[in-house]
Structure formats: C-alpha cells, structure tokens
Image (cartoon, rainbow, N blue to C red; front, side):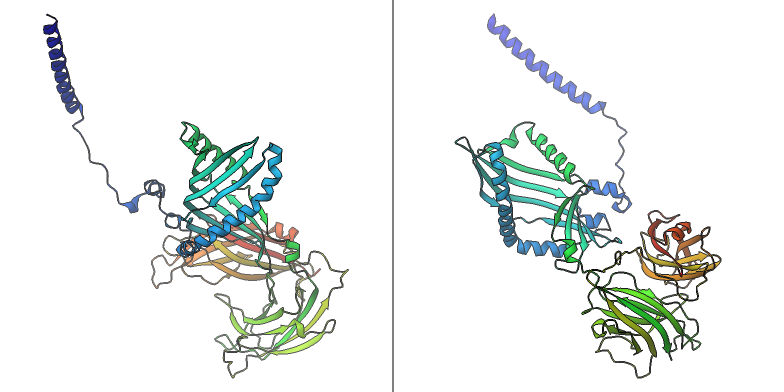
Amino acid sequence: MGIISTVMGAFGFGFGTTIGVVIGYFMFIYSQSTDVQDPEIRPLAELEPESLARMFPEIPLWVKNPDFDRIDWLNKFIENMWPYLNKAICKTATTVAKPIIVEQTPKYKIESVEFEKLTLGSLPPTFQGIKFYTTDDKELILELSIKWAANPNVLVAAKAFGLRATVQVVDLQVFATPRITLKPLVPSFPCFANIAVSLMSKPHVDFGLKLLGVDVMAIPGLYRFVQELIKDQVAKMYLWPKSLNVQIMDPSKAMLKPVGILDVKVVRAIKLKRKDFLGGSDPYVKLTLTGDKLPGKKTVVKHSNLNPEWNEEFNMVVKDPETQELELTVYDWEQVGKPDKIGMNVIPLKDLAPEEPKVMTLELLKSMDPNEPQAEKSRGQLVVEVEYKPFKEDAIPDNLDDPNAVEKAPEGTPSGGGLLVVIVHEAEDVEGKYHTNPFVRLLFRGEEKKTKRVKKNRDPRWDEDFQFTLDEPPTNDKLHVEVVSTSSRMGLIHPKETLGYVVINLADVVSNRRINEKYHLIDSKNGRIQIELQWRTSS
C-alpha cells in the first residue's frame, strides 16, 4: 500500500507540474499586449548633446565640447616619455615624502614607514582635451580632461610595536578635470611664479587595496564607502574655487622693477607718404616700449595733413634700459577698417645718455626687418624729443605699473571738458544666424564710429580705440555699443544682422577715470564684449 501511495504521489507531482508550466506559458504569451509599436528611430544628428553624452560616455571632450582642443600630440609625447617620466616622478615622490614621513611617524608611535616598491606602471595618463581661458590679468588658465587607467604597484611597509604590516595599492583609475592657473607671468624662467590647481568636478577614483596581502576592497560595503570618502575629501579641499597652491619662485624677485622714466615729445612729421585715395592722410603716432605689456600710447589724429604738428608729451616707465626700445609707428587713420601703416622706426634706450634731452629726426621705414627691401620712395620723417631719467635708489615712485593710471589729455583739450577714449578689445561667443563676420558700432551723441570687420570668428579681437573730445564731462550720457555682422557675399538676402548690444552709462568712468569690463550683450545667448573707457583731462 505504501508503494502505491508513493507512486501515485510522484505521478501527481509530475502531472501537476507539467500542467502548471503549460498554463503559465499560455498565460504569459496571451497576456502580452498585441499593440506593440516599433521604437522611434532618430538620426544621431537630431539628438541633444546631453543624450549623446549618455549614449557615448567615452567620447573625448574635444568632440562633445567645441571649446576643448584636441591634443593627440601631447598623448603621443607622454607615451614615448612615460618609462622615463615614471622613474623621475617616483624618485621625486620618494624624496619629497621621506622628510614628511620622518616628521610625522613619531606622533603615532610608528617606528618606520618605507616604500618597498613604487612604480606607476606601464600605462600613461591620457588627455581627452584642453581648454584655455583668456583674462586681463598676467596669468594663464588651462583646463584639462584627464583619464588614467593605470597598473601601479605601490607597496608601503610600516613597523610599530615590533610588528610589521604592508599596504599595497594596485589597479588605479582616475578621471578628473583639473583647472591649472599659472600666475603671475614673469620674465624669468619658467615664466610663472605660482601654480594653482583646482578640480572643476568631483573626481572618479577607483583602486585596489591590499592589507597584509588580503584584498580589503572585497569586503562588502567597504569599497563604496572608501570611494565616496575619497571623493568627498578631495572635493572638500580642491573643488573650485578652492585650490592647491604651489609657489615656484618669489614673484617680487622675478618681476623687473622700474628703474626710470622716458619722457617722449612727439613734435611733428614731415612729408608723410600719401595713403588716401584723394592724395591725403589722417596720421597719428603710436608709441610702445618693447617688453612692456601695458597698452601703447597714441597721439590725436591730424586729418588731411602730410606735415602734421602734435607737440604731445608722454611718460613711459622703463624697466630695462639695456634691452628695451621705443617703437614709433605712424598710422593713417581710417573711419572703417584697419588703419594703414605709413612707416615706423625705433630708438634703443641704451643709446640715450641719462638726463640729456635729445631731439631726433627719424626716417620712417616699412619695417625694422633688415632682410626686407625698403622702397626707394620716402615714407616721410618723424621729429621727436626724448629724455631718459633714471631713478635714484631711494626715490622710486609708487604705482608706476598701475594699470588704472590714465594719461593726461593732449594740448588744446577744453579746460572744463576732456577726452573720452573708448577702446574696443574683444568679444566672446557672438554668433549670427546667417553669418558671423563681426564688427563693433559705437553711437555717442549722434556720432557713429566703427571697428574693422573680422571674418568668420565667434571670438573676435579688435583692440581699436576711438576718441571723443568733449566740452564737459559726460556724466549724464550713455554709450551705445552694438556688435554687427555683415555678409561676405554679394546679395540682398540677410546682408546684415545684429549679434547683440549694450548701453553703458558714462557716469562711472568720469568718477573713476578708467573702467575696463566685460559686458553681457543684450539679445545674445552667451555673447560678451570687453570695453575699456578712459576719461582724460588736462589737470
């Protein structure tokens, strides 16, 4: 009887299981929706940048972001140099770490800590892209995208209380986007005094850790805890705007200090070369000192005059009279477009005797390149008076390098008024719907002035200045600045379009004498323009 019940039970279990599987299969099949739609297929070109980034996370930044430049040459260089860089970096790390370890170990009653093995492995880091930032300060800012999947072998042995323990780091992964700022830039090698490193986002750090030969990262929960702890601690210390600062040299010792003043009087020009179509010229003189990053100085424009007289005086700070030269360039002013160069010449400061005024008549040349043939026809002459006045050691004036200093207005400026100088430096992220050939249009008191046009450029640079002689300070006036693009092709369809504009109140420049700012352009998505304003008076 027992055998029969066992057989019947097995038969019932097998039959029931079979029936259950069959019923479950048919329920699964026929319970599915019959209204199945094909997935939407879209070309990659129609997808948003965020969607593409999620689909292809390994795409380099120079592909996803046009502001980042491709630097395959740097990756190739590091790849070939890595065996030597690896040894040099490890040697430097050991040298730097040893005194720190010797100083810190007694605090924790540790006898010794030594590197038994230290190598970064055979796989170098790769740079996915680089981005540069331009500022008005003496600094260089670059942003890197770094990915490093390394196979290092770092083995550290520690001894305490007669016991010895080893910690080993293997299989390292680091993904980071550091911003490196080199400032200030100085004229002594390596040409910067400090390095500041910040992280633009939390880094991804992954590594294997062995304690006494046991992989402790395999302990449940510990891996994620350690990874998040490292991210948070590193971000707390170095996430922008916080930074790691390393001083390379003393900036005060690297920077050249002022040693004197060069007085320059631009007297007149003689028989200048005709540049305009109707046989005249609108000359002005630009003065610059080689090795000086401050903006050059300019005389006023003398319209329709081939023998102009200026009698304008300028003071220029001298830092190295043995190597610096005074460059004098005569230009023909153009209302639209780039000014034409009439001629130039230079005066080496080492040829000037201190405290002795010297009147010089300079022949204007096409360029100072000795290999470039000079035209037989004269370009004219320029008469200047120069005097170099060196400082006494105990009488060096302060604020000679002050970038906010404004020179005096030239002779003939109204006593109650002054000279409004507008310098159009550059623009960023300006883009037209049909074309991007930007120039700047200035409107002030009904007068219109324009810069030259820069073709096919979203980040144009002009560095052009315009002057307005006023009988009274422009306290209640406004300056209209407009960025305009014109088509480079002949045609009547979309010949001109506005890329953005800004209206600047001039009350601040009257009180501060000088303003140099970047303004967000109205009717532009991300466009900005840098405008420098100066209010010069005769007092």
